[in-house]
Image 1 (cartoon, rainbow, N blue to C red):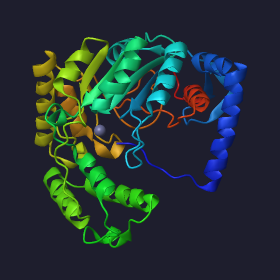
Image 2: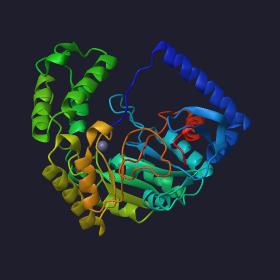
Image 3: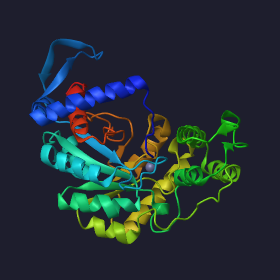
Image 4: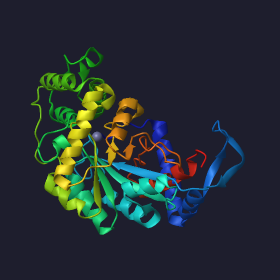
Length: 366
Ligand SMILES: [Zn+2]
């Protein structure tokens, strides 16, 4: 799911300054120096992560940066913002030029052997939206970039919508003036403005993430009744078909599991976790002829999975699992808790600056 936020005045001023500085660095070519520093140097810190003198030391091994995307389209949907097609293309041209883009599976193998190339970066998508095929795939194919898409397999080729998409649809389509009768924490919250609607939707999503699947599905039906909209359980244009998946798999796109129905795994039993992983793995194997080795946790924060989840992944043969915890992966990282994210920036110089800056500031001892 996409990250939604609002800028305060100070945030907006800071963002403008960063945009101005990064444009200057980009235009002057100084960003290349920052990239070289990010590739070769790291902050010197002691065990307690405190800066020590000399403040910069030579990086002894490469690290791995993993970018996350969900949707690429020009629909300008404020409730589930996508990366615009032109922006995605600019970002991919930039990473193709300045980074060593690896398939995630290969990157993980090299990472474990401490044999990653400098500036290693992997591109990933979550959920399996059809626009990945329509808009992202042509861009990465033209640039010969590999990418990995994590599929919530119950929604692939079936038209079935994922639970969070049913919530987005409800808030997108409702004409109700407020939300009444769903939960006391959002009782009678007004839905007049877009910002009220987004904030309320975020609160509703947070409530729903705490529930098990049956209860969550029930509450989504209640939500739709409260918002006087029909629950959109089926949408044949939203998600990938297995034909799309097969076509992309022939052209540098790999597929990992994102469970079957996108539950929050920390909220389900060990048996249900295993059932989700097995069902998803079998669907991918049935359609692509190979078992997925990579996995992305639904929602992906530390609170959304636990040791049982990790042990089940290991037992079923997954070689890595990615989170949505932001950061760069340093040698020695837990392969079942790989960090992932990207600058949520549409302005290319700022995107480029932040990518390099995050890498420079990654700080665990190599
Ligand atoms: Zn997801």
